[in-house]
Image 1 (cartoon, rainbow, N blue to C red):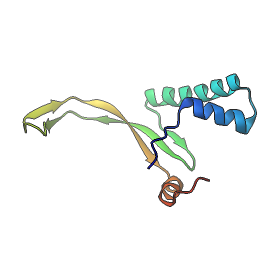
Image 2 (image 1 turned 90 degrees about the horizontal axis):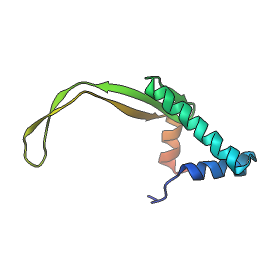
Image 3 (image 1 turned 90 degrees about the vertical axis):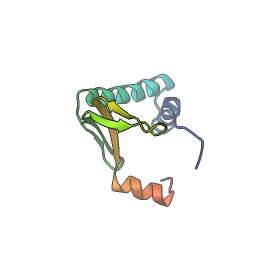
Length: 100
């Protein structure tokens, strides 16, 4: 495993190199795409990117959990959680370790 993390700046730089937009335009494009995705998720919509995966929001109900250190029961309040389900193509690529 690598300790490398892909950042917004890395994505902007990739758009700059691959597409040929200016650095500012590339950064704005990445920001716009991420903003559209996050806005849709906040509204409870599903974001599906073909050959990559699906982001969705789930509502979890209240339940009783247990503190692993003490064993005490602890109430867990209802909440919304973000989930990601990779596509079969992405799963296969990650399993094979292929870059492209």
